[in-house]
Length: 319
Figure 1 (cartoon, rainbow, N blue to C red):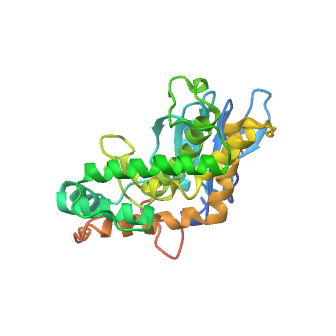
Figure 2 (figure 1 turned 90 degrees about the vertical axis):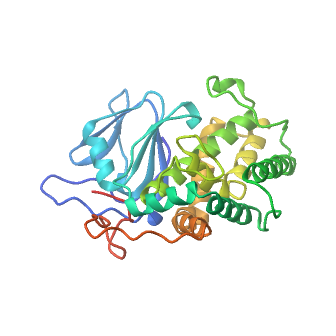
């Protein structure tokens, strides 16, 4: 396991704690080969020897369960109450199998997101805004989304080459097989672990803000298309350099742990030092606002946010 956080579960006879705002939480915790349960009011991981490790569930954004991890109904319920995303991932976090939603999404935001995605002109505006945010310059004029996707892919491939060269990492191209984790080279395995961390954090932010992970703009057709859209805004500046830095150490035999674990710890640290979690939710609205379509007002009978701004939690959480 790796990761850390703040407050956590309830004690018998005490009222449930108010969720900590997402932007104030630690990023994530990975758990493998352990039983997750609630014991004596605490959220714990119990290994094969019966050793309990306390997980401060209310102080993390995302709990990522790897092969060998099992979770009880009580633990899932407490995670949902705390507004913490629970995901089931493959070895090294390379594949997402399932994810729980930390509360009910805001219908007005879902409608706005869907309307933008279905309007060709608005969608192109959103994609152009994401390009400008990612590369610090406006994209070429009069380009379709497919053309912008191709230009972006070329720039990303070139960025990988440059960052690999800076860290003196042997690099050919981005290639890995999700069904055969060990067949990829060290650099690709580090990149997969790093992007998995960023995707988990981004999905927690997307869900907490009340949007749909599947309704993407540049990425489409995948359960996490919008998560990939948002994560790509930060990938080259955060997790990719860390992945190549760890890969360089691994190639020199300078690691005292598996490279995937070293990458996770490095990502955790860069998330904390950059304050990334606090930046993602406002950036989502900034991206979507570029579509220049008005946000629909929630109907009078709609249920409001579970936790009001200025008290605790984030819009979208449902206790």
